[in-house]
Amino acid sequence: MEFRPTKIPVPEYSEVDKQRFLQEIYGVRKPAVLKNLDLGACMTRWTVDYISRKGGGREVKIHVSELPQMDFIQKNFIYRSLPFDVFVHRAAENKHKEFFISEDEKYYLRSLGEDPRKDIADISKQFPELAEDIQIPEFFVKDQFFSSVFRISSSGLQLWTHYDVMDNLLIQVTGTKRVVLYSPRDAPYLYLSGDKSEVLDVDNPDLVRYPLFTQARRYECTLQAGDVLFIPALWFHNTVAEEFGVGVNVFWRHLPSECYDKTDTYGNKDPTAASRAVQILDRALKTLDELPEEYKDFYARKMVLRIQNKAYSTDLE
Image (cartoon, rainbow, N blue to C red; front, side, top):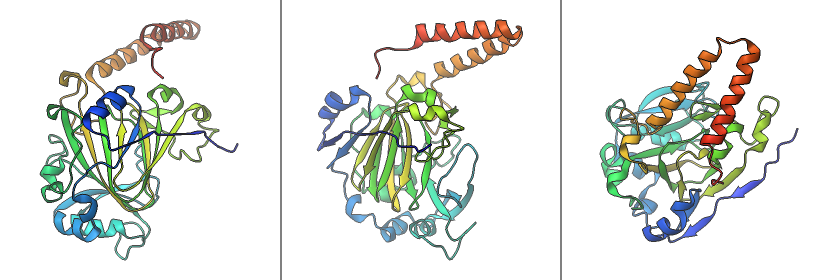
């Protein structure tokens, strides 16, 4: 079966300030591409040589994959460490004279805190010399700030489809990136494993294995250097670096701080109430196993109906 999904373009807005963002975009709870923002000196300074020189020789932990499609569920990549300046030059190459797996391997950096188990990623702390160059749009209250993640990708690298539990801005400083997004309402069609979709290749999915995927509505945009993508919490996204690219993701807490897991340094753990609900559901399903199959089927269906009647919102798109 040939897969030809309808592509819904992500709307674009030009020269958005905080007031316009909050009035016209934020409350809609849908992705939006923001163009022509003042992002600072990074737009002219961040060449490969400049970034590597400013970042220096500090060790960074990177993902290395022989395949361009990285899969976090099957873990088809390895973690390695390199001096930052060496990593940047390698990531900018198409063929490597020095490599871990093969001359075609792909690299991906997702910056971490000093102690990833305790500290969040913050470009102003991990890469202060580079942080001076970027002006992050102030579209949220400073107290809501959670993290600023520095990202660098090899050309052609595709990252798995996943959702985040916080709102975020993806600032594309250099390179071109294609982003495919799916609404939280389409979660039933994405074959989830935790916060990730099992459907790795969203362009040519295995429809025998994932037949419901055809029902997921596909939103898509291509970010050019200088574009900023607003990704609301819970929206699934899959990215392809069409060129070597450098960007910064800024996450903020849009729910009260007590809603979030205090041990979460990556910003990808479900809200504490959601985690408790899942644990309760798991216990309920385990209890149903005590019943004969016919009764188990009947009461499981009643549970599904109750969830649909009590928890599903009919007001969301």
